[in-house]
Every structure is written in C-alpha cells, then in structure tokens.
Image 1 (tube, rainbow, N blue to C red):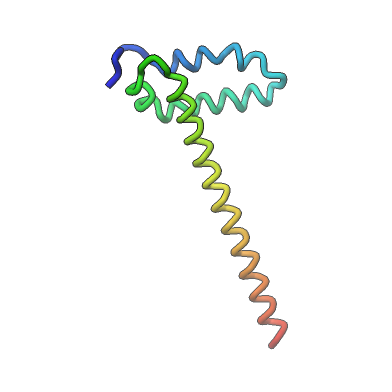
Image 2 (cartoon, rainbow, N blue to C red; image 1 turned 60 degrees about the vertical axis):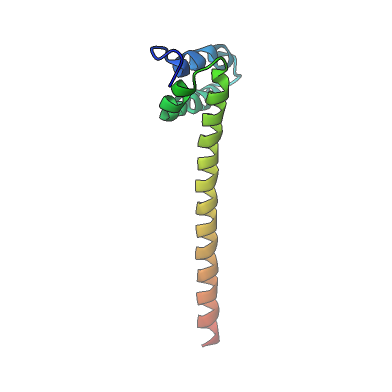
Length: 98
C-alpha cells in the first residue's frame, strides 16, 4: 500500500525522464526509450504500491524485469533454432548413410 494512494508515482517518474528522452540524439532511440518507459505500466500496481521517496528504483527494476523477460524469450528462440538445425543435420546424416 502506498503512503500516497491518490498519487500516481509511475506517471510522475516517467514524466521526470522526459528531458532525458528529448535529448537523445536520434528519433529511433527516443522511440525505444519511450517504449521501454511505457512498458513499465505493466507493473504500475507494484510501482505505485512501493511509492516511497525513491520511485526511480521501482522504475529501474521494472525496466530490468522487462529486459530479462526479453532476454529469456530470445534465448529460448535461439535454443529452439539450434535444436532444429541439429535435428535437420542428424536427419541428413542418416539419409546419407542409407
């Protein structure tokens, strides 16, 4: 439960990063950073519940969590693709020997 239940900590924290976003040197980076910040809304309840004097901590943790989820997903995609290639190579080896 937040000390300030009517305060949207996440929105205020994201707004505090606008200057940083606006000063990124490419539109691509700005879009990526905006998307990263927007993704934090998935964890809004947890971030707002933490509240407290350091909302940046919650924001960074949610960004890290999103990044880790993406890393895990990409890792599984790579692993699955490697397995497909190995299975294909194994099947080809069996065909050649017969």
